[in-house]
Length: 231
Image 1 (spheres, rainbow, N blue to C red):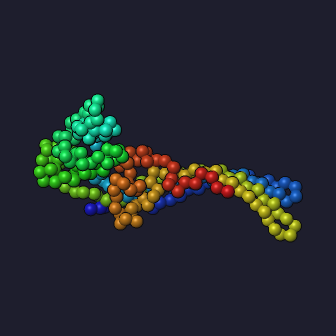
Image 2 (image 1 turned 30 degrees about the vertical axis):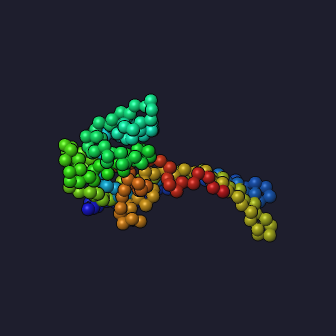
């Protein structure tokens, strides 16, 4: 299931620059400059039905199970080494059997809470979270759907670049030049932001999925294609 923002806008890029150039004796020219760019209304796609664990106690219980694994125990706090006492992750054990919980050891070893939450949300029948007394929308705001693909134009980006260059013109028409650029590119979603490479597929393990669709600043960082220095 998917939709597009009815008020979607065309992306735009604004650019500004300042360059100072000076010619020295013997046909030697040097310049220094700054280039700035800002992209606005950039296309981005995300899951409106993203799994959320805020305020549920799920994170605290996950951390308990993760600590058990770090101490050499099973996620449920059993089978610990001699002299070690595990702590039961109460909420997780209320949500599923100890057997199912312990079978997800890799999620706790890699701190993959998103993967584990999707697993718990996907349990069905007698193993579902509703069968264990949890509301159907414990993880997703719209439990009757899986992913709800949505595309809007709310992305933005910034680029700042400082460059220096030198050029020497020779009598025979030969030019010798050298340049150096120090730059930084920042955005909140730069790898295939519309999910085009996967037909719009979004998952907890691919880089185009935002950390939290309600707080895009969490993903504001150096662009995936950022090149700090170039010559």
